[in-house]
Image (tube, rainbow, N blue to C red; front, top):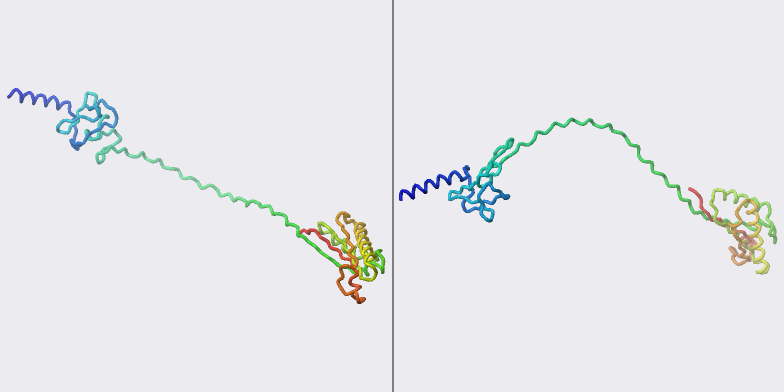
Amino acid sequence: MKKIVAFLLAASAIAGSALAQTSPPFAPLTTDIQAAKPTSAYVQDARGVIARNPFGLCWRTGYWTPADAVPGCDLPLCVEPATLVDGKCVTPAAPVAPVAPVADAPIVAKAAPVVPVAPAAPVPTSEKVSFSADAFFDFDKAVLKDEGKAKLDDLSSKLQGINLEVIIAVGHTDSVGSDEYNQKLSMRRAEAVKAYLLAKGVDGKRVYTEGKGEKQPVADNKTSAGRAQNRRVEIEVVGTRAK
């Protein structure tokens, strides 16, 4: 019996030299300690769980070094400049080099971009003027009188500021005479107006003529005053004028 006890004590002494000599806290015996990566520093089973003795000490091998320390078996072994704080290795933060102040950059005023101004859109214009045929022509004639030419000269001068699109000259008569005769007379008078405007430099492609005869009276043909109003030449100018 004494020999058996002596053998156990010797075996325990030998085993103690192979056990990890660590300080508490150790992992509870009911907790498996798994190596974070394959290692030959500890005795492990087929699952990679580190073997421990009944006292909770991990079995180290002859390959163990402080760098192989595993939490639960060994307290963290810190390498300078790291220090142990609350059971963890903490490396102090590197000193922050002072940053030289940056001189304020000079403020350069930038000129506002020039926004091009769109040209003003031309304004459409339409002007219709009615002239007495008696002022333009002698009775039953289609030859312009001096008074009529003066009125057309004034009209031509006003065309200078207009981008001309069209001029329409329409001749009208009273009811004296046949419809056929009055139709031809109104047309000849409208053509006389066109011919004079062309002589003043107006583009002939822009001038149109019509003869309405006695079909569109503006007054009663039963009175001399009414017939005078019906004997007329209407001139309409259509174009655009810049603002």
